[in-house]
Amino acid sequence: MAGRAPVLRVGHWLLVGVVLVWSLAPYLWTLATSFKTERELYQFPVTYWPHAPTIVNYVAVFTQNPFGRFLLNSALVTVISTVACLFIAALAAYAFARLRFRGREALLVGLLIVAMIPLITVIVPLYILVRNLGLLNSYAGLVAPYVTYALPVAIFILTAFFREIPQELEEAALIDGCTRLNTLWRIIAPLAAPGLITAGIIVFVYTWNEFLVALTLTSTNEVRTITVGIALYRGEFTFPWGVISAAVTLATIPIMVLILLGQRLVIRGLTAGAVKG
Image (tube, rainbow, N blue to C red; front, side, top):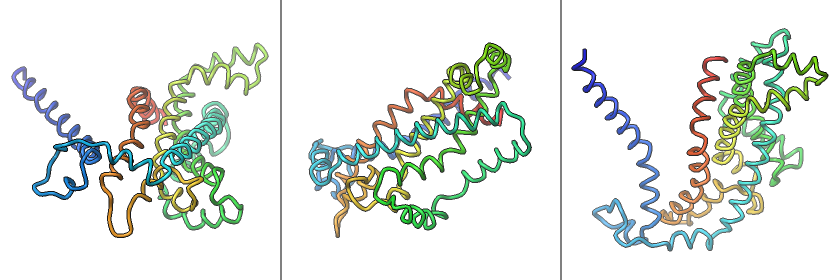
C-alpha cells in the first residue's frame, strides 16, 4: 500500500497538470494572438508565440470602436445588477432560512429549476416585454433580466450560509428590541459576508460575460456591453483576429482579478450550497 502512494501522487499531479493546460490553453493562445501581426497570423507553419510582439492590435481596439464606452457600460450594468441581486437575494434567503411557511422547500427547488431554463428559450418573450415597457437600449432594460436570471442561484447560496448562523444570536437581538430587518443587516449579513461575496462574484461574472440578452436588447453603442462590442470588430469579409484577441484579453482581466482574489470564498460558497441546500 505504501508503494502505491508515490504512484497515486504522481498520477494526481499529472491529472492536475492536464486539467490546468486544458483550461489555460485557450486563454494563452488568445494572449499570444493579440501580440501577433496580421501577416504572422496567417503564415505557415503556425507560430505558437509571436516572433516580433506588437501592441498594434491593442491600439486598434480603442481606435476602431468605442471600447472605453463598452467597458463603462459593462461596469455600470454589472455593478448595479450585482448590488440589486444581492439586496433582493438577502431578503429572500433570510425568509427561506428563518421563517416557517408552507411550501418553503418546494419554492426553493422551484427557483433552482427556473435557473436551469436556457436563456435562449425565453429571449423572444423577453424582448417583447422589454420593448413594450420602453426599455430597449437602456441600462434598466439590461439590469432587470440579469437580476431576475441570477437571483435563484444567489438565493440558494445565501440560504445555505444563513442556515449555518446560530439562531440564538438572532433571538438575542430580537429580545433586545431589534426588528427582523435590523437583525438581518446588523447581525446575519456581517456573519454571512463570505456568502455575500461568493454570490456577488458569481453574479458579477455571469453579468459581465453575458452576450445574448445584451445583443438582443441593445442596438446602439451608448448602452452596448463589452461582449457585444467585441463582436463589432469583425469586418464585412474578414475577421481581424489580432484585434479581437486583444479586446478579449482586456475584457478578461477584471474577471481574472476578481476570481483570483475570491476563489477560496467561491469554492466555500458552492460547497456550502451543495451540502446545505
